[in-house]
Length: 251
Picture 1 (cartoon, one colour):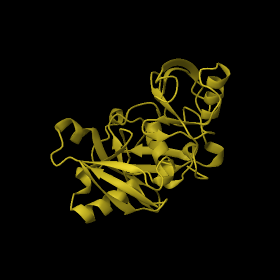
Picture 2: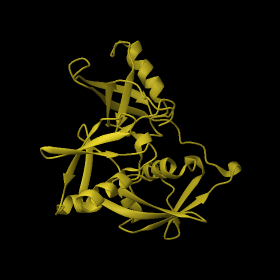
Picture 3: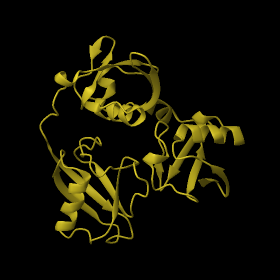
């Protein structure tokens, strides 16, 4: 498919494939404009597109979609230090991932799952010989810094640790301007609830009219059959809801 890259008052089009990562798209832009990947920020609807994810993680991007390109030639100190590059090593392979310092161990496992396909429940992450066994701790708690190497061990099926007990979350559901005049709706729900269950709760309470909706958390489309915990949703987070459907078979 072909998308439009908008830069300032001008735009140009590039061809992309569904399996291409955001990083690969930035590399194409670098080839066309000679703008280093590290200086590019791609956004849609004001949300930044994450390097490690691909088009199947952003099903709202279709043929003709406009993606904003911002060029940061001289990143500020805060922006420069908010993201770090780490290496995740398996027994026979390794992958490089860009993460935020304020991400949790759980959200890192989620990214590894999305990029590599490794089941979250089978992952045991180690750094400097110590297991990162508290999933809701920030990476900084374990001393993770730029270019850190994290080792992934895979637990056997008999040693997999069950999910921790469910927790109650107080969230804000933010609707778009096409729904209820951009309302902010406080909501309490279990973190073990799926996105489908959240949708049904909003429909049952008549908070949303009967229609098709897309839920977004931290710049990513949420998956219908996955729990809020799986998506890394924390107490006080905001979920955005838009009218629409996911057009691709998987996302």
